[in-house]
Image 1 (cartoon, one colour):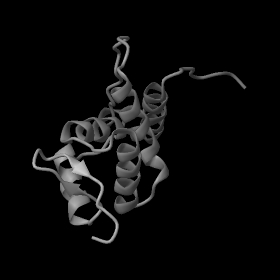
Image 2 (cartoon, helix red, strand yellow):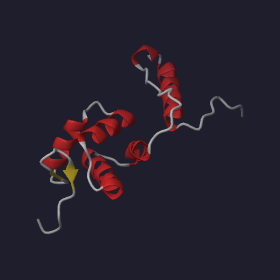
Image 3 (cartoon, one colour):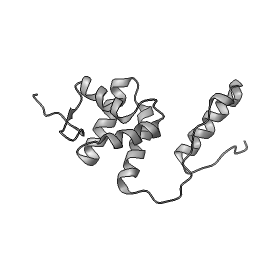
Image 4 (cartoon, one colour):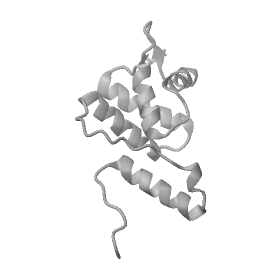
Length: 126
């Protein structure tokens, strides 16, 4: 079998597969995912946020996706800022903002908010 595409970037592979599916369905005009072309090194926080975003597809349902984002984010950083959630939402292909994700997490009772607006884990027994 011949190789159709090769990349070390998950985002590029996702974009290729999405475009191929859209092309096969005959609706390529409706699908165009921006692939980050920057070759600049990512800082550790950005790398972890990208890893969290790439793992979201493994969860089914909105609540499970939020739980996964929060669990991994809290383990890595202790808290998640709205800017972090914006990056995760963008990388995961959500049509929501980080503020929308934060609001949903609080509404589902999955996290609390600090005075600065960051999400923090709820303590057991609360």
